[in-house]
Length: 220
Image (tube, rainbow, N blue to C red; front, side, top):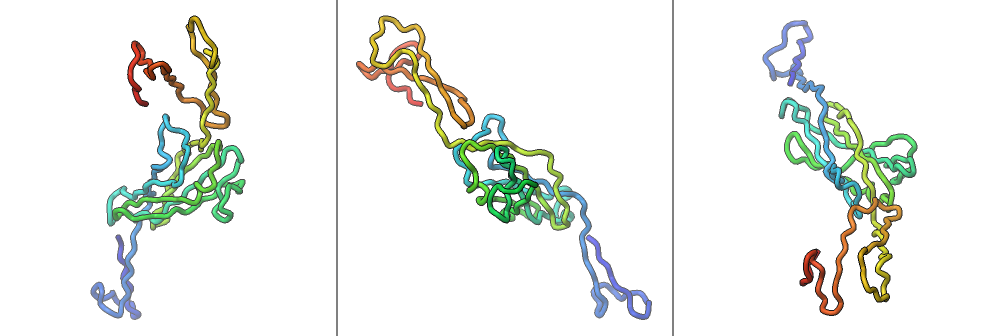
């Protein structure tokens, strides 16, 4: 934090700080950029698709030296890219219509003196089933230092349920012996089949196969 004092018109030294009529200017000098993070959609190698995503959110901090040395976060902006349409979200149209990168300012809520939470519920209204998107966030502090972004996070919107078909045994057909149960599963334009558990129920007494014996419904 710096202070500048003016000199008197006759060239003499300025009087004591704060004494009128001399003007005192105070300013802060900082060159360290803030840092942002994306919480929703969360960065996880095991979760890359979402059946619904109504809000994008994250955090931003400016904690290089701590308050009051740091300038504090001013705002956060996001950039979202539709990989199938090859278009960026354009705040001026409210849709994925831009062929060049566009930044959209988020809604920011101050949490502490050097940190805030950001949210956006506008971009998710344009997400489409089966489409793949990339998102990156960028924080800007009050000294106009821009965060240096390092990469994007890719995720998919998948609202469609997969389709499972049992090929054998054939429904309604009597079988003397069954050695294999098999079928097919597909997910269309979705994110793909992650797993395919099966459950076998004995119709005569509603018992379930538990892996070594028959018993009550094991649940999920």
